[in-house]
Image 1 (spheres, rainbow, N blue to C red):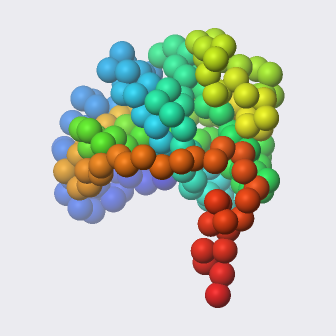
Image 2: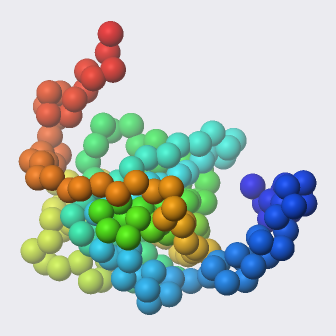
Image 3: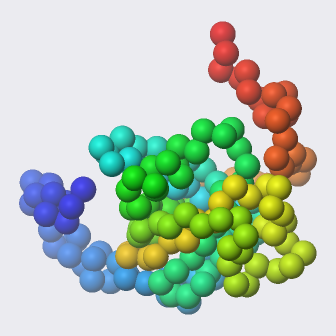
Length: 189
């Protein structure tokens, strides 16, 4: 949705003044230090991509704290771990580099952060600066590609409707093809 489209709906709903205040006080064209710290403390994010025709895909990405590497106020990177081999998100990025990232802190503040920008696919060997040598993110077996994102805008997602969750221990089987551990048949009738 373009800014003009947003403004049409804001005029219809009488929220132009409120929206203008939001744009001026909340929307940044870069990651502030507080945003960078917030991202580095997250274990999950949601990514939204679309192909050249506009067909969309929204997918979660999971990992340990530090899943996303901050490379500066305008750039971040995340690994595309080995998955089902479909590559819906990467395929979309190949056709249309626009990407939306949503970080939600379900365990603490319940605040969220939207980051929109352009994505670039890079090979597993192009490990971002700042990823430690002993980090799971160095495992070439688990990483299909790196995605580098150039930030165009970043803004808060307020906490008022975000539920608070409690983390419990779960054994994660990274890179497995075992259908039982992947719950592959969960929706099969």
